[in-house]
Each structure stands twice: as structure tokens, then as C-alpha cells.
Image (tube, rainbow, N blue to C red):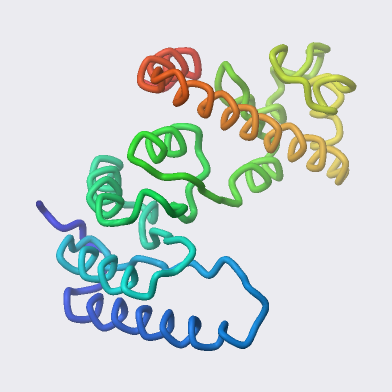
Length: 225
């Protein structure tokens, strides 16, 4: 595998990974005196498979409530991210939550769950709301664009969120252009609801062993190639 250049060499990445493991041990020791919390060990190792394997195995010795995968989705090629994600997840126990950190786009979410991830998090739904962008079942809608100045339809006809039930694209565009905080809030409400609905649908498709078919249908409709 060609290692994508992160600017961090092997030895630096190794030292950082080992520091993360030491922190995890200290955290577990400190939590003995605290209320029970879901302390997750974060697997690191950069773009180096052997370091990710060692990180995962060392953290598993701590028998933590769950495990997270860090250091991905930082600008590396998608194929490399998926390769390292699948490789790393393979070392983590199936009976404990597996968490991919910093992933929030619909494609990255679906690809993560296909590879055995249980949960993700990201600032994306609120960050793009600040830029006037909505996630919909038919792709992104950049509502601040002039196209929507007199568009009195909802953001997404398939959405049941508060925003879609009460406001139009034209009005939300007006709020965004006028720098009214309500516009950002309405888009944030919608984007968060869209992603929770997407996750609800993903769970259903997993239960019916149909996630790959759903992925292909969703990607085509959303505009992914």
C-alpha cells in the first residue's frame, strides 16, 4: 500500500500512537473512582497498517466499553480511508460499539456502516448550514443561491422536520442573505433530521440484509457517481 503523505513520518506516528495508548491506560485507572462512563479507546496509527493493528490490539487489552477509530477522514483519498477503516475495524470486537470519528457526509456514513462501524459524529450538518447548504434525499441544496430567490417549495418534500413543514426555500434564503441566525438554525434542524432519518433507514436495510442495494439506489438519487 502506498502511504499517503500526511507530513508525519513513521517514527513520529508510532510515538504519537503509543502516547494515545498510555493516555487510555491512565484514563481507565482514573475512571475506577468515577461514575461509570462509556470510556472509548481511540485507535490511532496514521496511514500505517502495522501501527493501527498494534494500537487496536493494545487497546483491546484494556477491555473498554467501546472503541473509536481516529486519524481518518483528514484529507486522504477515499479509497485509502475505506481500506484503512475496514482493516482497523477487523481487529475490534463485534460485541462492543465501534465508532468512526469525524465522519458526517452521507457517503462516508454509509461506507462506514458497511465496514462494521456502529456510530459516527461530525460537525458537518451545522457547519454547512452556516454556509446556506441543506442535505436532501436528492442531493445538496445550496439555498443561498439566486436560483431559490422565488422558490416557494420546501427544502425536501420527503422530509418531516420542523423546517420543511413550515418554511420555504425562498424564505430561508432571505434569512441567510440577511444574516439572520434563524436561517442557520432552520437549516441545522433540517440537516440533523435528514441524517437521523438516513440512519433509521440504514438500520432497516441492515436488518433486511439490503444495505448494498440501498447504497446504490441512494447514491444515484443523491448525485454520487
